[in-house]
Length: 113
Length: 112
Image (cartoon, rainbow over all chains, first blue to last red; front, side, top):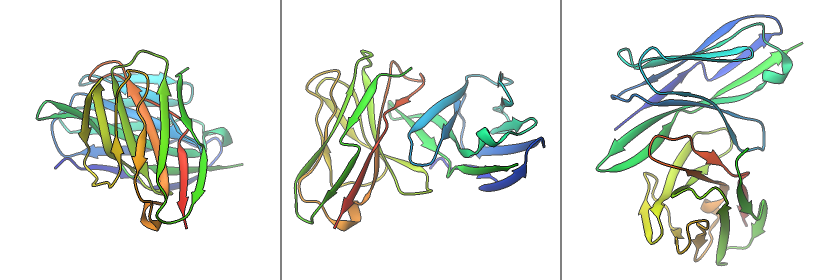
């Protein structure tokens, strides 16, 4: 059974600081997604990582994928309050001909002024 | 921006009632999904469909049922709601296997 683990699950940081969050998964996959969820809202797609070594950047967020280590990182540069949200990683697997996304528990980020 | 719509956004009902949560998308996506998410927790796949007349159960056991009579419509039905069904239900769609899943705004269900 695929397990997707995010670390940390809660993070409180100051504006202007940098931080990296991690997403580990337990089985082979070449596709990993990062989503953002604001309180009471739905999920918004941030990044799609489709191969080993993939790196994507959008604003203050940069995501990377190492399929050999089964690890994705989401790096936050010079955090601002607007980045406060819950961040989910999700791994795409195909089992018995069926494609599924398996989500981590989410990392709740609070950026303090 | 994704065009996937869920209604109602909020629903409070009594135990034993039958309810249908609606999900529609205008993107022509073949693949549609229903997830259940408790507050502050991860998403669990409860149903999915790869096209018209195709439905499958997901990883999380659910007493709900789904149908896919039209490409754009994927409703979820609870025949007899119970307090344990209280949760947020998120609908998503994608174009093909491996593509981004686009999510609707969700339905927050409370069963009293």
